[in-house]
Image 1 (cartoon, rainbow, N blue to C red):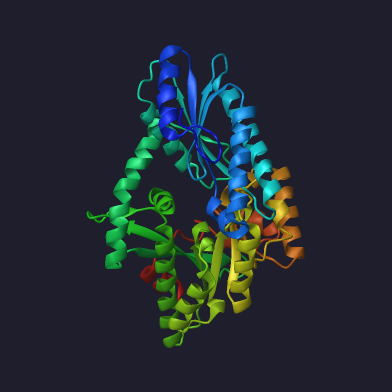
Image 2 (cartoon, one colour):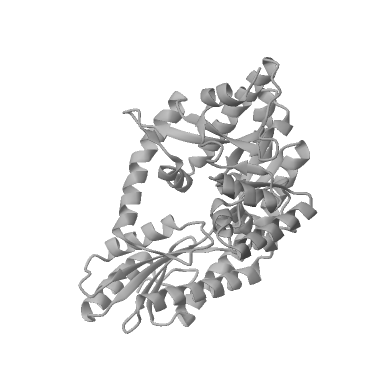
Length: 424
């Protein structure tokens, strides 16, 4: 029997061999579960490899001793694990509840070793029956599911389906299009205005990107962002957008136009670069753009990760003069707990939160209370996803003046935006 030298779990090859034998010998339903520890490299770098190894051993012991009906456990490499679990007489809903419970316990185990880190286990599962003979394919499917959910703190796990294979194939198609667009500088940058509902005047904009395929078809972010995040190319895209808007703002200044503040998105992956702050400052200085005209948007879920490190870098960016906003606020499960620690200037209320809150008087009261809290601590508030005058009126009565939504405009090409909103 081949075992991993650090944890004592099975090697990948031994797992595949034994799993095949077990499934062939017993005509029972199983799941293959694939898991990894989110941003484990950060733990190794900042806490030391001894601590990282201790965590891997703790997790291995947890899988071996406390996962009900676990037949086989493997550490395939680094922080990646596989489990074969017998789910005979267990329905799929109970399986998902159990995965969620075990995931929370495992996160607590990791937290005992590393303070200031909010660990996340990325888990993908693949349901198989006794007729499954290709164990490697079954493992691949579990890993596809794991990668789809990677970094999402609100998902206990992702279950493999054929739809996920379509996503994987889509990624394979998207990456060459992105590479060509990046190399040819043909990525399109759109701007969506932020409007004051009181004055009906533009007060800012958000920069968003679009890809164009060889037939001239526009590819929306929902079709390519996930693929770029999984390959790390999202970093290239974000800096492309930042460079574009720096040139745009410099053009306005040179033409005697007072710029509006433009926000751009930073992916979670940026914060694991030791030179993030310096790179952003250098790019803006190259174009001689005052930092007050740039707003950095960070998605709420990013702050659930390595908080100390991320907050430190956000503080450094704010100290230089950039505005920082937290995007999709209200979409996560711990938003209120973050209010006291987030070093941000602007809170963008997630459109799904806004839309649900507008459906009832109780929802209105909830939004009004949240906006009052944010106003009390001098945070600027933007409501996203407002589409009707009625919604605007309710949002305004709740205390929010800044609107970003289809009521005023969708994201539009830069030249159209300039013609419509920027006056010389």
